Amino acid sequence: MRKIKTAAALTAAAMLLAGCGEKNEKPTEVVHNTMTGETTSAPAETTTAGELKKYIITCAEIAEKTLADHKDDIPNTMEVTDDVMLTDVLGYDMSLADDYCVYMQMISTDLFEFTLIRAQSRNGNLITQMLEKRRDDLREKAAFYPQQVAAADAAIVGSINDVYYLICSEKAEDIEKRVMFYVLRN
Image 1 (cartoon, rainbow, N blue to C red):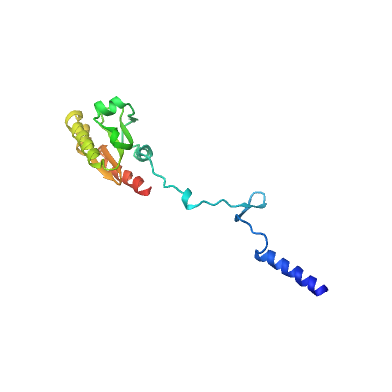
Image 2 (cartoon, helix red, strand yellow):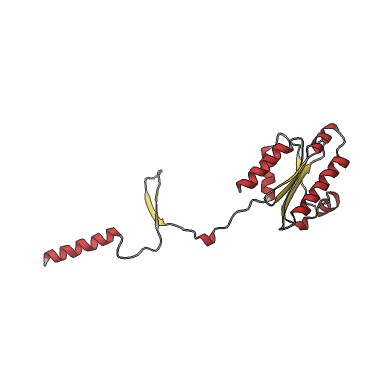
């Protein structure tokens, strides 16, 4: 009889060690605190595939990161947020955009403009035409001093994925590389 009780106790212990018996629905995470030397465990958090959403970097984030990377190459800038300025002065129709960000130089003899527009579906060609018109206006109506003419001549209109841009700067090609980096990295 004693052997049966011992065998039953050993079987129960083996089942507990092997994970049989009560089922733990959530996996546990063991954390070791190196400061206190304490070890604790808690249910681990899990995420299902349905909860994950692709993060899309905004035009403002791309612009802020790019401008920070080139702070020594560009004049002091300001973000243009006024609808009248965007439509009447710059000639932009932002109803074509899902997201946008426009920066230009503050009062300066420099010429700098940086526009990023995330196109609504099927509006890419219209946005490209709009940005090309703005680039031409910069070349014809805004470039008077030699450094302004150089910036206007170096101006780039382009796109990567659904982000369209106008970069008016003598360093336009370098700035364009950073824009591409941030869009593609996303």
